Length: 202
Image (tube, rainbow, N blue to C red; front, side):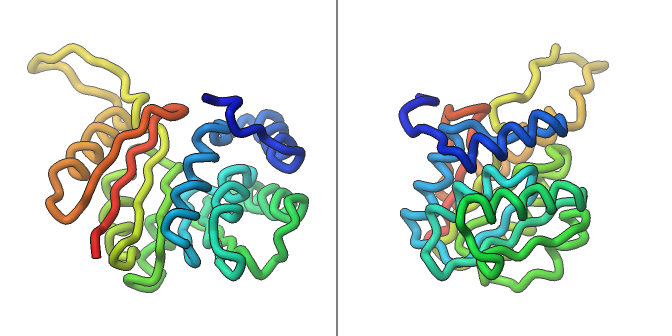
């Protein structure tokens, strides 16, 4: 599955930068799924939470319409610069991206309601339930919300003294919230470390 859609030089370069800076980049299969989802809905406006070194952004931009704009938020200014270089290497002009430095939960409330076609979360996992709340506000009807790493929740023993780590608790909580929300059509994809996707019907 990982090799079905090959990564080209800009993606490989972004992945190498991620390895040098000890940050994660999306797998090839995950990236291909993001590109597919963006193309399937004809996305013109996408919010990415967690820029990294730009590999996920390249995949998203390749699926978006030619006039689409990717808004990517990251707390680390260095990562934003690496991503900017990655987008340039991939042939995207600067006006196709809007890179915002800051904590996602400080930045997202400043973005316009119901103005985005897709929201992709790949940042602080313990904040995923809050990203869900913000993402639903940002999405237009028919928009898609996607969480990365949905299948990496660590098992823990049940019991009165058992306390899961914050990331595991948040991953389980956002999965439950998406599944139980009657406004959403959810889908859990066993791609990479798991993609939890949900569409907000018209």
